[in-house]
Image (cartoon, rainbow, N blue to C red; front, side, top):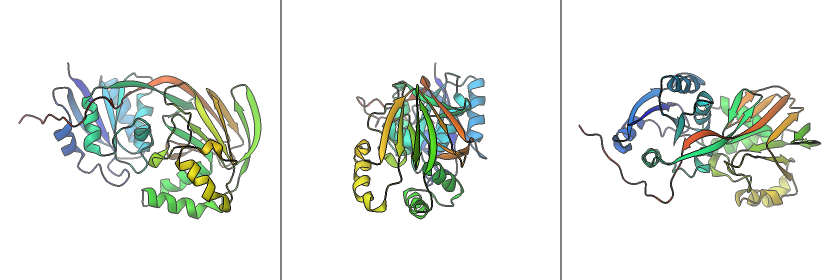
Length: 306
């Protein structure tokens, strides 16, 4: 029996690589394996509604075509359904796609679906309401996500410019952080919570994080002085951030952060207002995905027969 799949396309995601997606799907998806439908989102979080409806209608797979926000919308809609999620990365950051080692070229990502390689990954449920599949954070991280939400341009250069402009004016705050059974008080600039080792733009931030280990990796980050950036940035880019004097790392299945005075939380690259207290719980193996089988080629396709 063929896999019944819905492709949920964000037509304004990222840098526009999704504009020819219907042709890409037709030319690269194995039609002996899949029957599929394409739907386009029309407003914010429409992807969640489409994914939830697809699950109710008996679809086997829902494929998110877009960036990290689009992937999160689909994951949110599929929560608890058991329906498998595919990803065709077309955003600017593509954090979860990088963590799953998916190719960032849409046509190759479609061919990964033909491998039928299935995996179960963890998710982080936030305040019993929102699902995070890759990374979350409070502080400066959430502030930048909030600004990016309103930005007219996307991509790495736009993100870098925004961070540069906002860096000096955003100050650290005092937080009470309960990590498992331990409660600590810290003045922090960012508190980052990782389901995987990488964030958007394939940046490694948590060397020990694994997407299926049942654990949240927590990084409490001080505001790095400008004259320390030449030391800190190479540590970040080489996956050795834990060696920085400005970072303290913890691991736990459950985290509560109190004192989030600006109330915003970055959830998979999008800023959400969740209030001053935020509760994070890891749900092991709760999201079913198509991932890449690195032992098999992905360059074989079968065109639709006319």
